[in-house]
Image (cartoon, rainbow, N blue to C red; front, side):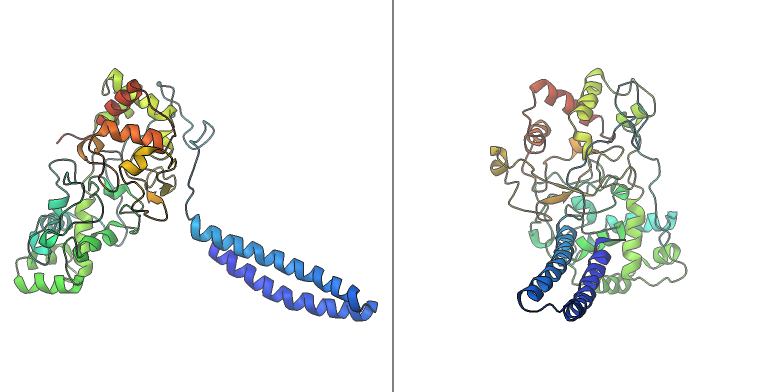
Amino acid sequence: MDNQTVIWILWGVAALGMGILWMLGEELSKRLGISGLRRGALMAGIGLGIVALSFKAFALELLNRHLEEPTAIPLPTVEGPMKRVGRDGAHKWQPLPRQAPAPEDNPTTMAKVTLGRALFHDRNLSSTGEVACSDCHQLETGGDDGRALSLGVGGAQGGRNAPTVWNSAFFSRLFWDGRAASLEQQAAGPLMHPAEMGNSSLESLAHKLQAEGGYGEAFAAAFPQSAEITPLHITRALAAFQRTLITPDTPYDRYARGDRSALTAQQQRGLQQFHSLGCRNCHRDPLFSAAAKVQPFGNYRPFPVHKQHSVVSRYGLMEDQGRQGRWRVPSLRNVALTAPYFHNGSVAELKEAVRVMGLVQLNRTLTEAQIEDLTAFLHGLDHDT
């Protein structure tokens, strides 16, 4: 039973209890012959019980609003779900699956993937014909555009750093603030955002593509039950293509599958530091994000946690509060290829990003050796470009 249901039940119990207890108090007063101050004391006691019950309901409502996800979760012990221990002494590391999951209402087919790929690279999907999905998510590199903030139609600047599109199929929540629950929902966002692709509606985009022609056969092949170009078909095709953008064969994945030579000695030291320092609490393998469909561990975390460090103001980490200071945990796959870093793109170098994370999340000043080893390990999460 979720919190909201519990809250309604408690409020109902409180209201019902108020009526019952009031009648009970009246009856007891009559039978016991209580009046005056003694009757007032009895009713006050009953009232305190009602207030206590109401307070519980109020407290649960606050929890429901502010604690949708755990904000600090300890790494599982060896008795937990990651019981197996590898030769490196850490909990067994998980490789990324070689195929991304697809929803029942949008199974992946070659026809959908082919259509989605064409749409992904088509600037005509923007209102002005200037911007394609692939302009902000360049597949030949890390899946982003290398800018702090992306540029949309008419040169408009976006509000947040463009995340990589690689491996997005494994996320349980999409966007920095986690506002989309599926790739289909996510695909609609940039198409209509005024600072991105600028369409007034998905319906107007569908009418535009239908009128201009060129996609009729592709949509008919992808959606044979209804060849019409619709908003639903557009987003489903884009989502189907994105589910093929996965990187299951990085040096790390080969290491996790048993090839101990896939990571260098320095990268293996970094892997051990990643585990022992607690980085894995939030950036959990195999996606290296807790907000994953595989090995999920809670979608959101507070950032920054330790706000007293000067880097917080230096890099403007609190100018955008996300979800009241909490963010969907980003993946670290391809992180060495996707500079600049953080939601505002304020940190240009990976080593500096590692140092900042040590301060604001762990409240630790990492040594240069730790930073070097951790950075080397993160390079092991990159795919070949």
